[in-house]
Image (tube, rainbow, N blue to C red; front, side, top):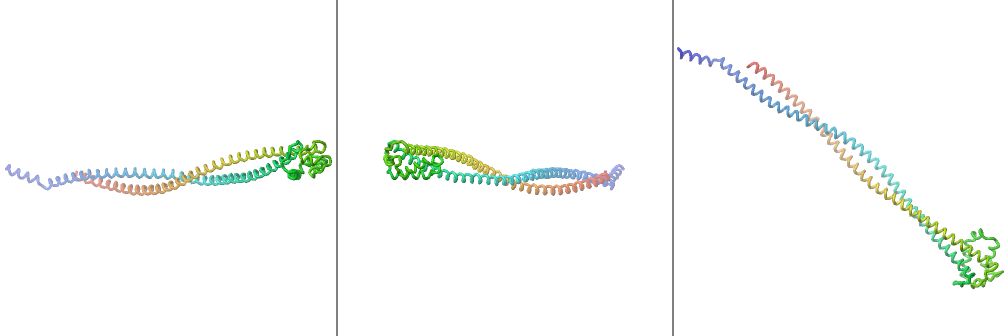
Length: 317
């Protein structure tokens, strides 16, 4: 009897009901395992989505900052280049003007030196001619012939007659003219030419006139020399000042040309950075949009699977 009861009990344990229970328990375990695995994959997906969003957002932010700074920089350097172009143009004009002033001053000074040299020679010749004529009154023998002395003196008197006229009387001039013609109406022309004239009467007047002429020539020579020295000093001062301005201008040109070249290079690199940043921003925005859509879809799928599993777990629980 007992063996029969036990046999019937064993048969009862293997009934369909027990099999269903075992099946449901297996299903529950499978669902729980699936949920755990799905959660792990979802965690990975969420981590990737978070990292992708952070990275792409950072790239977008950095690109926007770079776009802003480089756009401002390009604008500033472009304006700087334009300003430097104008400054270089003005410097070129200033340098050209200073160099033209130097060239004009050089020509003018060359003409002044030439004129001074001619005037100085003329005055020295006049002084020498008059001095040699006067030497006869002092008893000094003339080294030149009578004709040479008189010829030189006549040229001196003729070339300076206007000045002589303004400083002498008509009578004195007539005496001088008679002397130059070698007349002997009151003094010995022959004695003068021999260097033995007696300084008296008309001869004394002529000697005084010649001495006055020599003194005037010496005064004029000193004035000419002083004036030329002043002109030379002014010329050298002008050359020094303008040369300094030219040198300074050329140094500025070199500096500003380098600044302009640097500004141009920065504009080029800035535009390249703007282009690169624009591309990077667009790519990051596209990637972020795709990632967000992918992550949203993945989250939606995970939520749907989770809900379905929860229902199944409830059903088999």
